[in-house]
Each structure stands twice: as structure tokens, then as C-alpha cells.
Image (cartoon, rainbow over all chains, first blue to last red; front, side, top):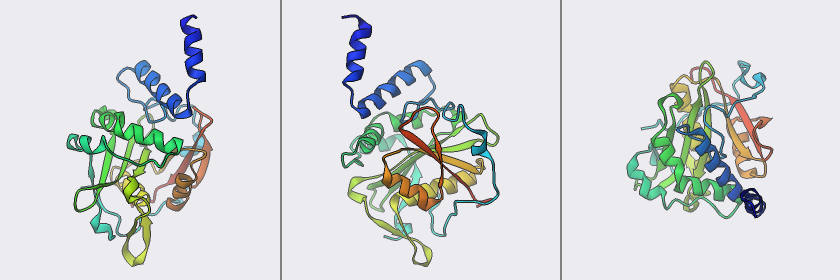
Length: 73
Length: 174
């Protein structure tokens, strides 16, 4: 069995959470010092290929901060 | 509990032993994945965050020091101003279901409290008004939390089909 065939077998037997961990490991190794998020996407690349509309400020906030939310100490 | 009974502070290396035993999963795959990250590389990643990502991991504890909830956010730094991305919020399994009483009798979950504290910190840091999270499509609990805090705009995630992005807009100047 070649290395590629062995890898294909391992991947086909992975659960979804194992695949997420494996992706994170591969992404981390490829990215060198750049961290990756919990889904394996390198920080700084999460918004790659983003629809620019997502960043359009409407001026109508959807989020409000109620009284009593603690400040970070 | 009252909101002043939950202390939210920045992660320190002293938290690592407690986080190594942190439990937030009741067995669902996305909860297992988050728990494994929190018990493993996530806090170390944030402790070693390169400055241009401004990674911030927050710990919410009881007055007795028990970790009730954690949250982590950083910036995606190619935009002006930088866009805040909340990577994870997780409530400890023993604290799940506890409500926190705010002013005027309003109650929020611990997850909601942490997300709102993160948004408050983003405002203080001058982040882009638009902010987002990524959520497993099957994670109805987190999607409902997004709805409650105003992350109501759903977008497909360009990197993977099993996630969606939830976007919202911060209030101007808090």
C-alpha cells in the first residue's frame, strides 16, 4: 500500500471531529507560525473570498449591550 | 446569579491546569471539538498570539474562582478598522443552564453574557462595526444564541460547507 493509499484509508475512516482536528493540524503545519482557528482556518485568512457586502455598515445596529454586562478585568 | 458574581478577565498561563480539565461537551460532535481545543491548543494559541492578530481569550469565573465560561476573539487584520472574529464561546458543563440577572430584571445565559462582554470589549478596542462568528450548521443551541445577541445575518462560509457565518453590527460607540 502506498503512503497516499494509506492516507486515503485513514481519512475515509475518520469521524467528523477527527477530521476537524486533522485539518487544524495540517493547516497549522502549513501556516508555520500563523495560528489557525478551531476549524483549521489560518488566522488572517478566515475572511478570504468574503462577499464585500458582509462588511457594509448599515448604520442600524443589530447588537445592543444591555446594562450590567461586566467589563473585562 | 447576579452579573457582578461573574468575573470576566483575560486568560493567563496560570489558567492552563484548570482548562486542561475543562468540560463543555455533552457528547455532540461540535461540542467535543470545542472541548478538545479548549483542553489543548486553544489557550496556548491565544497566549502566544502574534500582536497583529490581537488574540484575546477571556475567562469567566465565579467569585470562588471556578471557570464558568470561556470566550476567545481576535482580529482578521486586513481590513480597516480590523474586523473582530469571535472564535469560540463555551459554557462549562456544570454551569450550563445557569442564568445571570442583569439590570431591570433581564436574564441572560452565561454564553450570552460572554458574547456581550466580548462585543463590549470590541467596542472599547475600536473594532469594525461588523462582527461575526462561525457555527456548525447543526448547532441549533449556538445559532439560537446568535439570534439572541443580534448575530442575525447568515452567510455561507467560503472555506467549508458544514459551517455558516453569522454577522451582526455593533452599536456606535457602545
